Structure formats: C-alpha cells, structure tokens
Image 1 (tube, rainbow, N blue to C red):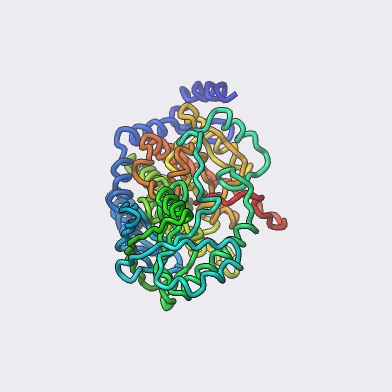
Image 2: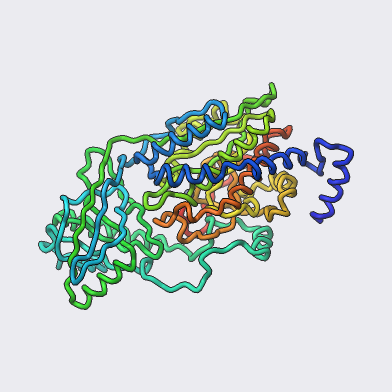
Length: 527
Ligand SMILES: [Zn+2]
C-alpha cells in the first residue's frame, strides 16, 4: 500500500512541484532533497562528535565537565548562527558538585597488577595512598554484620560479587540492528509496552531489600572507619553512582571504587581460598557546593506573524556518567539535534514556527533539565496551571537510544499523530525509517512533556551496542556510527521543518478524566 501511495504522490508532484499533497499532510520533497544534500555533503557530525566526546570529556551533572560541555555547546550553536543561544538554569540539583581528580588502584600481593578503576560518583577521597590487606566483607543478611564489628578500621574493603555482577559468557552478538520481523512486530503491537528495552520482569521488592542491606553495610563501614570500599563494576565496567546523595555540609562519604569484574573476581577468588591479597589505593575527589542543573538552548525564530511564537522543540541530554565520555548516551542525541538545526539554518529557509534545540542537564538523576524547562515555561509545578507557552507548544522530538539509526517513531499512544508521521516518514522508508509503533516508551526526557499532555516523541533506533554503550567506561567515540547519526540528523531536520510549516500544531492527546495509570511492570531501562 505504501508503494502505491508514494507512486500516486509522485505523479501529483509533477503538477504541484512545491507541496506534495498526501491524504492528510503536506510533504515538501524539494526541501527533503535539500536537507539530504546539506546533511550528507556538508555534514558537521564528525566535528560535533569529537568535540562533545574527546574534547569536552565526561559530563556528570554538577561536575566541571558538565560546565565544559555546556560552554562548548553554546559556542557551537553560536558558530552555527542559531539565535537566542543561552545556558539557562533549569533547577537546583539535590547532590553536590563533584570532580574526580585522581584514581589509582593496584594489587600488590601476592604479586603486582594494576587495575583501571573508576570512583563511584559523589563518594569521598582516601587519606592519601592507602596500603594494606584486602578484607572481603561477605554480608548476606543483617545478622552477618555482627562478626565484622571492631575489625575494619583503616581497611581496604572488598564487597562480594552479586548475581548481577557475576560474569556469564554471552553467545549473543555484541551489536545488532532491528530486523524487518522485529519492526513489523513493533508496528503491530496494540498494547502499550513499558520501558525502552524489553527485559526481565523487575523485582522491585528484592531491589529495595538489597539496597537497604547495602545501606546498613555502608553505615557499619563508616562507623568502623574503613579506608575504602571496592565494588565489582559488572560485565561492562559501570562506574556510576551508588545512589547516595551528597549535600554541602554533609560529612564526606567514604571513598568507594568500582573495579573491573576480572580484577575483582581474581581478588575475591584468592581471598576465598585463603590467599592474602594486598592493595594500594589512592582516590582524590573534590566536592563543591550547590551546583545547578543547566540546559543549553538555541533556535531559529519563526517568521509567520501568527505562528512565530509557537515552538517545535528538538532535544537530547548533555549530561553523562563519568567513566567514559558519554558518547552513545547521549552525546549522540545532542549532536544529531544540533546538526538537524544547523542543516535547516544553512538552507536559509524561513520556518513559520520557531524551531528550538534544547540540550538537557541532569537527565541521569531524574530528567532534571527537561522537567525544569517544562516548569519554567509550560506548566506551574504547584498549581498545575498552564503557562502562556503551553498553548504555543507544538511538538518535542527526543533522541536518547544510542548511536543507532532511526527506524521509526514511538507514538506514545498518540493515535492522532499516526497519520502525520506516516506521511512525514514515508520519504525515509528507503533508509529503513518508517515504522510507527503505538507503544509508550519511558526512561528519558520526552516523558517530561508527555506527562503534562504535550506531544513528546522518542525514536525507534537500532540498538547497536546498547549493553556496553550505556553508562560504562566504554561509552566513548568508538561506540558511535557516524553514518547513522548523519541519517538521524537528516530525518530530524525534515520532521522539524514540516512540523514548523504545517498549518496546525502537532495533534495532542485529548484531556480525559481517567485514573492515572502506571506504566506496566518492566524495569525502567538505563537512561
Ligand atoms: Zn541517556
């Protein structure tokens, strides 16, 4: 059916060279041609990719790296000729500012081996270089805590592996693209799905019990005055936070290090077989008080006298975890959104509505930046009253599923937007991006808009190396597929352009007086 429709459309184009009339939507193929030329021949994707990963480095919320990232993005947006470019405060941040200045860890007995480690975010420093025997604190239940009391002062503590950090050899390919069958299945699913990835059902009670026990262990280690805690960083060497907050005025948390699972496993096996293990460890972290969460914003102002104050918004999150350089998550989204707006800018078109790009801060700790934007411009957080810009908001497009190519769009159950996307994505079917899935997806910044009744969409993307690309030390430039990112920028530019030119705003879900439903039971994916 799709081929037939395109054929009819192409015949119509002969008579109407500028606007192609499909059943419900105007699709400007001349503009799509120009967008493709600009995006392919004059691409800035590579320059943006090295800039935000290698030059800027990791961008943990509230760190100096996040400031560096925001300044870099602002400068690039100005270079590209965007207007009203600004770094704007989105919200307070409920943790301290934190920088890691030094990390060194090595096994010194029974023989020497150094390990590439990362401190857990928002944990403290060691008192200089700490040397000594490594103590395995094997606490499976609260009653096990007793036997360690009075024995841990100044010690290097190894936490045992857990079911989620034990290594299992995988026979799955490291990277994958969605197959035609998988895409067909997505387009047929009528029930709203949960998170962005379909995984094991999530046992929240077990997770909470585990967290509670872990807090009790940390309390014990703190009161004993242990020198440093070492965790198994899991299959893909994940260095992120233990969830602990840190506010200025708190006592600095105990130093804590995530070490590669192979290094961890070696030491744990030795200790369990009664071979003494010795280490030396030095960690230096710096805390600074009251950082804010910032967004970086730039735009191409609208030109239609009636529509110029309406906004088409493109976004991705600029914060990352601190182990790698946050390339797939989510520098890839940031550079695609910046490139999309650059393409439109360079074509010198005059969009009817304003097209704005926003790079969100603090996504990883709870969608802070996008939520702050919504509260600032769209909905009063206390009264829930709509602000003036609410009615002028058209649509938000978000990219936060890694470096893979767009394969379609998730409708977030917005049936009314289906025919719009069907028409706008049809020209990109040859690039493999035409699947329309009714499902809800969660876990990232489009939710900030969706939950206040505004159209916010997240793309379906090829997963590529999701496992080792998210939150890990391996999330670096190497994880990026620049050719895919070029295509994503082209498709985003076309969607943004058409959203800015169409007569109506993007269709919204009608307001209904229904009980609020939670997203059914899948684990919220990594963001
Ligand atoms: Zn992300």
